Length: 326
Ligand code: 13P
Ligand code: SF4
Image 1 (tube, protein in one colour):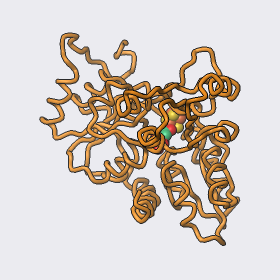
Image 2 (cartoon, helix red, strand yellow; image 1 turned 30 degrees about the horizontal axis):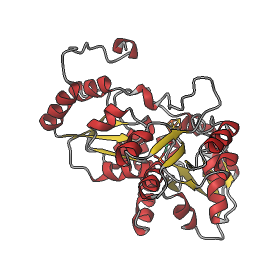
Image 3 (cartoon, helix red, strand yellow; image 1 turned 90 degrees about the horizontal axis):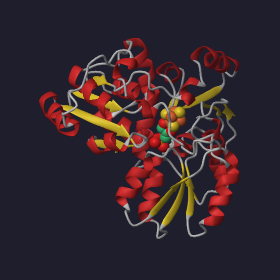
Image 4 (cartoon, protein in one colour; image 1 turned 90 degrees about the vertical axis):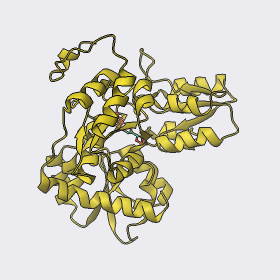
C-alpha cells in the first residue's frame, strides 16, 4: 500500500520494523491509548487497548486518563471522543475515514427539516457529524436506542435521525411513532435476502444474527438483533455452534477469538465481490496507526462552540445509559 497516496502520511516505514512492538513502545513513551471499533482489521484489534461498539468507545474516551487517544474507527467516533474529552490529543490513522450513514444527513438539510417540525424531540444516532449532534436533543447508539426513545415522555413527538432502518426497528420495539430521516449505511443495506435464505437452508444448525442497521426484511428473518457488542455477547452465550452474521465482517475476529470452536459465516452481500467490509473503516491500517501515533497527526481538531453544543446531547445519552446499567 502506498502511504504517500493517502495525502498527508508522507513518511516511509522501515520494512524491518515490528510494528506491533513499535506501537507498544509508543504507547508507553507517550502515555497513549488505542481505542478500536470491532470493524477494524484484525491487526489493529490485536494492538488495541479497548475494542468496542460506539457506546463503549464513547464511555472509554470520556474516562481515559491517557494523554493521547489513537482512535481506530471512523471520523464521527473520534469526534465524539474529542467532544467528551477535549483535553486529550485525539489522532486518527486516516482523517478521510468517514461514514456513508453520517454523510446521508447534511446539517443544512437536517436543520431545515427540524425547523419544519419544531414540536419534536430530536434523537440522533451517534453515526452523525458534530453539527448534527449539536442540532439534537439526545444521542443514541444501537445498544441504548430503545432505552433512549423510552426516556422521552409519551406525549412528545420524536424525530429519529439519520438511520431509517434502526429507527424503524426501534419504533417496532417501543411502539412509538417517530418521524424518520431517510438515511442508511451502505454496508448494512447491501445484504442479499435471497442469498441469506439460501445460506440458512444450507446451514439449518446456524442462528442468523443481524445488526439493526440492516433493512427490515433481513431483520424479520433474524434469530437475534443487536449492536456489535450485543451480537458478540450473543455468540459467546448461545449454545449454538454456528452463526450467520449480518454486519460488517470485522466483528468475526472477536467472535472467533472468543469461541474458537464455533463457526461464523458472514452474511452474503448483494454484490459480486462477496465481501461486506466497510470501505471507510478499512481505510485504517496498522501502518497508518503506527504513523499517526509516532507523528501525532492527523489530529482531530474541534471548534469549542460546536463542541459544547454537541456535548449536551451526548452527556444525556451517557446519563440514561448509566441509569440502565449500559
Ligand atoms: P455499533 O458498534 O455501536 O453497533 O455500531 C455499528 C456501526 O455501524 C458503527 O459504524
Ligand atoms: Fe458508517 Fe456503515 Fe461504515 Fe458503520 S459500517 S462506519 S455505519 S458506513
